[in-house]
Image 1 (tube, rainbow, N blue to C red):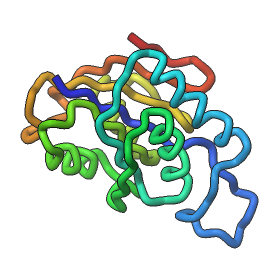
Image 2 (tube, rainbow, N blue to C red; image 1 turned 90 degrees about the horizontal axis):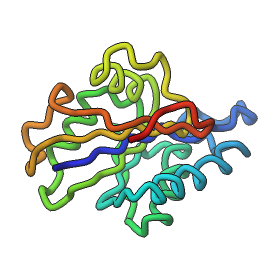
Image 3 (cartoon, one colour; image 1 turned 90 degrees about the vertical axis):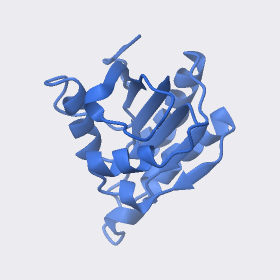
Image 4 (cartoon, helix red, strand yellow; image 1 turned 180 degrees about the horizontal axis):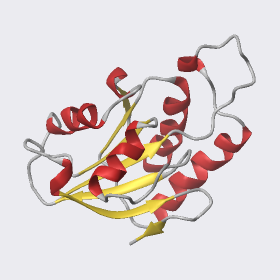
Length: 164
């Protein structure tokens, strides 16, 4: 059984218009929400084997809190910046089969698109620092498909998601 935890980056700052989208940092709310959500996920009993993040600053900064909470190294993949559902699948299909639970950190609209593929009409938007928890009933990553996954839950900083 494989578990996929997909996290949208925490709230970012638009305060410095001289920064590119890629280099936007977390704002005060993002700096509060990211460690809180990492702690909540761990308290629910989740265990991470691997953490993969978009290389955009706001996603890396969010993932760093989870990396510290779970004591798991963080790796970066540029394909998660503006990543579409197929980009996520390609990364998942390439994982070592010893990895049973992976957390991936990225951006909208891709994360909301993934949510709607798995559970049609589930949501119109995964909020910042929102987490979707998916299960894939296989011992192998190769052949992974969104339509073969089950949604176990959605967690949001405001608590308006659901969790199993």
